Length: 284
Image (cartoon, rainbow, N blue to C red; front, side, top):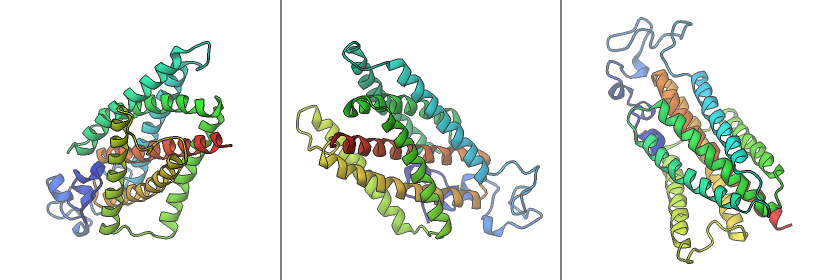
């Protein structure tokens, strides 16, 4: 079944079409030990120490770790660069807003390029991770204003993101969740709808007409919870896509596409959990 996720939809292997994406490879289900006609040497047999050309769960984990480390490093550097936001440093708030907005817009552009690029580019994935790190660091700095500068909210959001990832992975594996085409379509439509409403609200805000979709009140809390639910559903899609890619015997380079998709989802979860915590703390 074809993927509807823009991160993976341009890649044939994630959609069960590995033969068309990588000439010379046949349907993985027909590969046998001894490499039948059309299958590269080593495909269809048990991977060995010398069989390093295929995408594996380990390679996805490694590439995702590199991407997330870049996000973290760029976020920490951005946080330090902005400096304290207080009465003695009034310009730092404008600096934080500027970096957050710039990081968000450039990150959106890079995410679209990576999502619709036929052949994944590792440098572009890494560039996206750095830009997202700038956005995460600046946005986190701005959010702390709503809780009196308490940075513990950032650590709580990180733990919440890790917990959401681990919990979703455990449920996905232990309950052997099967992702159907209907489920994919539903989640993808919901994500596009959410992003569309957020962009519309952002555009209207310049004219004072926004409908509070992303405010820090009750509406914002409800929307944030819905966004976290969407993020968890996106993680399920990500896990499914990784499994399908590994089963299709994709080249190891495609691990970067999987890492990009997971990075997008984890940053989404972190931002939404951080917003929810800030709203709840601000209402105390």
